[in-house]
Image (cartoon, rainbow, N blue to C red; front, side, top):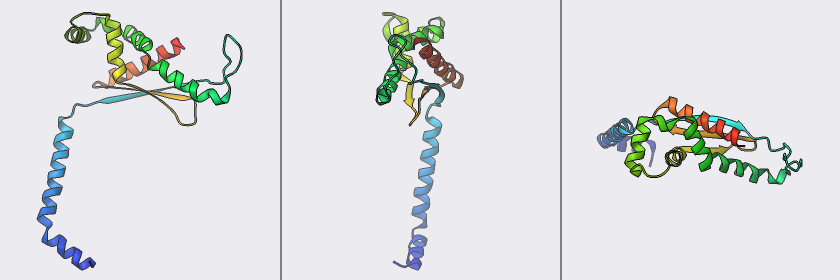
Length: 161
């Protein structure tokens, strides 16, 4: 097919191409307007792998640093840290959180355990490539809440560690 034949084919079918393009743009706009807004706050913490163990005073070998970073990620995403975040943010005093807790659990169980599970669902801890930095991301419908929770996870992790 030559370039001239391609141009002739496009001219003959320009209405179909315009309809498909218009439908695609319209669907994209409608979907993006209907989807709820989500904001992601990001904070970072530096993990010092070369610091000596406080009990044995031995430094960590370089080949264990990968498992050490994985352990630190597990600590950040642990239920203990999430429950401490829920307590530090005083979520038990939030009427909205109390209402959600009663709707989902009927008021049974520990509120902090439930709130920690809710917080953990929107949390993501990622190691940076070839460095000792862990990025903590939290998504929420409110940007201030997302930033507050991400910072609280970083602070509680540092206190826990």
